[in-house]
Amino acid sequence: MAALIEAQAPGKLVLAGEYAVLEGAPGLAVAVDVRAQARVTSLPGRGNQLAIPDTGEHFRFHWVSDSRPRWEKNSPGAFGLPLEVCAEILSARGLLPRASELSACEIELLTAAFFQAGKAGQRMKLGLGSSAAVVVALTGALLRFAGGPALSRQDLIDICCEAHRRLQGGNGSGIDVATSITGGTVAIKISRHPATDARIVQALPVAWPRQLRLVAVWSGESASTPAMLGRLRAFRERNAENYSGHMERLGATAGQAVAAWKAENVGALLSAVASYEIGLRRLDDSAGIGIFSAVHERLRAIAQEHAAVYKPSGAGGGDFGIALTDSRDVEQALRADYAAAGYRTLDAELCAPGLTVRGGAMPAGHRGPG
Image (cartoon, rainbow, N blue to C red; front, side, top):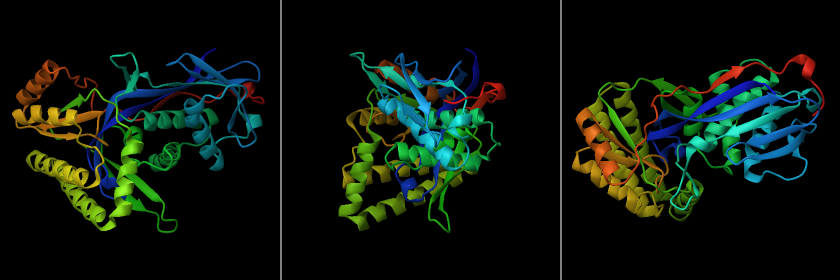
C-alpha cells in the first residue's frame, strides 16, 4: 500500500470571544502546531477500512449509494462519526462521486497529539480543538480523494462548520474550525445568511503583535464543552434578559480586543482581555457554568504575581489557560513558575499553518465498487 493523500490540520487557542461568539460576537484565536492527520491509502480489491492508529483498531466498511460508509461488522461508534458526517455532507453537496466510482481505500485518522496520559494512564484531551481539527483534515483528504475542483477557503469553512456542528450535536461556534482551516492568528466574524439565516463564520488573518507574549498552560484537567454549553443554554432559558446583557457586554469587549489586536496596541489589548476575563467571571457567577475552576484560579494567581493577564482559553473549567504580557522576562518567569508548580506549558508553535493536503486523487484505473 502507498499513502496517496495526507491532510493535516492544527488545533487552536481562543484568545477572546468565548461564549459570546455563539451570539454573533467577534473573536480572536491562534492556530497551534498540534495537528490532526487524515490519510487515504489505496487498497487492492473491493473493501475499505477505517483505521484508528491511536487505538490500533480497524473497521471494515463499504460505500453505499449516497457515498456514505456502511460498517460491515463492528461499528466504530464515536470513532466513525467524523467519516459518516463528512462523507454525508460532501455527498449532499455533490462533492463526492457515486459509490460505484469511489476507489477502495483505507482511511486513517490520527489525533494522538491532542491527548495526554493521565496519572492513572487514562487518555485525557488537552482541549485544543481535536474534533474540529479532525473534521478539517478529513474533509480536506476526502475532497482531494474525490478529485473535484478546488474550493475557496470560505466554502471549506462553511462545509466543515456544518460537519462539526452535526458531530457535536448542534453545538459549536465555528471559531475552532475556521482557525484550523486558515492557520496563523485570525479575527472571527459571525454573520447570518440573508435568505436562510444560517450562520456564516468568516476568518480574517491578522498579524501577531510584535510585543505580545503568550504562555499557554494546561490545567491538567479535561473539560466537557458540551456539558458547559448545556448549562449556558439552561441559564438562557431561565433568565433570557440577564443572558442577553452578559452577551452584549462580552461582545462589546471582544470587539475592543479585536480592534486593539489589529492596531497592534498591546496595552489596549491586555486591558481588553482583562476586561473580558471579568465579564466571563460575571457570566459564570450568574449561570453556574463552571468556567473558573479551582485550578484556573491557581493559574491566574501565578500570572497575577507577575502582573500578567490570565484567562481560560475556550470553554474553561479545565483544558488550557493563557497568560498574556508584553515582557519577555515575565514570559520566562511564568514558564518557570508554572513548571515549578507542576503545570505543563505548551511548547508547540503558535501561528501554525492551517490545513495542508499532500498527494493527488486516486488513479482512474484503480476505480471500482466499494
